Length: 144
Image (tube, rainbow, N blue to C red):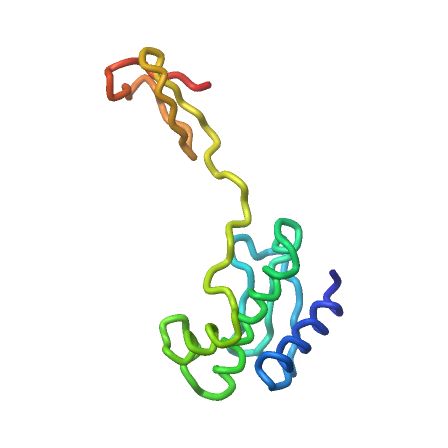
């Protein structure tokens, strides 16, 4: 999907679900890592993570667009546009937008550690010095 197609999709969603036009710019931003989208308060621009379409289908992108449009329209109307505000929660529920972005990575656990005695396995994100630690049963640990 190109930026022009994204702009057209955001404008259509804004008219169909919010009954208000979207008058600013919506683009993909490759620098977004963990969030699905972002609303800029000063420029009213919307940024979206292109990884959403690579990992999930278009329905997830549409729910993220609805979330960001809730921020957009509430901010322009001088209503509560933050996640904690009641107006935001009500509009998000009314339009069917997603509250959170689904995880964009499959599995963060890189290292699998096994006890050499009881063969209990567990996972870690960071590497650790196994000489300093033991299993619950007292056995030595090793990477698998």
